[in-house]
Amino acid sequence: MADAVLVLNAGSSSIKFGLFGISDAEPALLCKGLLDEHEAKPRLTARTPSGETLFEKQRETSDADGAHLFADVLGFIEDRFGEGLRAVGHRIVHGGADYSGPVELTDDVFTRLEALTPLAPLHQPRCLAPVHAIGAIRPALTQIACFDTAFHHGMAPPANRFAIPKRYEAQGLRRYGFHGLSFEYVAARLAEIAPELASKRTVIAHLGNGASLCALRDGRSVDTTMGLTPLDGLVMGTRCGTIDPGVLLYLLQHEKMSVEDLRHMLYHESGLLGVSGISADMRTLLASHEAAAREAVDLFVFRAAQEIAAMANTLGGLECLVFTGGIGEHAKEIRGAIGERLGWLGVHIDAVANDDGSERINSSGSTIDVFVTPTNEELTIARHCVGVLRSKA
Image (cartoon, rainbow, N blue to C red; front, side, top):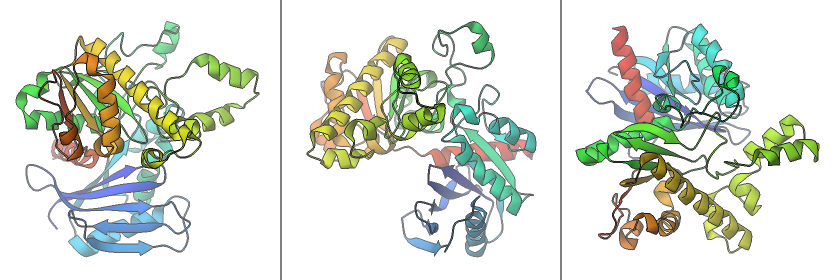
């Protein structure tokens, strides 16, 4: 195998991975796969870029830190592709105030990132666990952190500020934003589609189980819906999004909820699941005839359209709207409903284009360019890894 990097993208109960050759100017996907820990018997699956199965293995038991799973991945890569793995790149959700770009994962960096766990308690431990496991298996292998917060690092006041005493801002309590690796990929893709799009006032809607918006001016993030943590902003699969702080005080004071119970509710029992009482999966809700499912979908659409309009206010207008993420890419009903709510702003979606998988879906009468652009966080991470490796050479 020529030089390659392994990219790991950790979710709540599974880890997507991609192996990229880095000999050419652009990283090339060699294989992709999934470490699935949904069941008691974890499963590793690896496929070609076209989806043909290369390798599949199921372990009889799970281990606490997933070390055996990562040993399986590295073993498969070496058996199938030979030597040549130069680095492992990780999606790390929170980089805090210190990290505005990719960085090699030293012990000191790992400790600093671990300290940010209270700001992303659901995500940060899952992102860091593979770092620890691979470090134990291959201590000499370079590992690189790529941050979901980094793309928003240049956000300035007032967009990055909370209306709380300034002493807390000095401690790092400000709006950071997330989904930056996705937004970075989509921004680059827009420039590929048409160079003039890069300079337009653009809102990217990353809609999935986690969901947020990013306002772009000249390809740079100037505002976003998530804040200090990934809880803020839009309605999500199991997360509440923006909520009156008084609700939280009420639950603590009058319902006598513990802090841990409240955190569990906000991260795991709210959002689409909480409103519908049926499912956190948009596909299930769209297929349901239950009134509660429709209520959850309506709230999701209402909040997304409301926040897109707010992003347009930050930008001083809107010229381009891009849908990405699992819901944004695949749920035509949601794109259409959001478009209907934004008709007053000049967003008009062509029903045929919206149905047939076109990348551009605005009608001829729309004053806003509207796109559906599949994201690729793994490729973004691979690109960053190449940059770090070259800087070390």
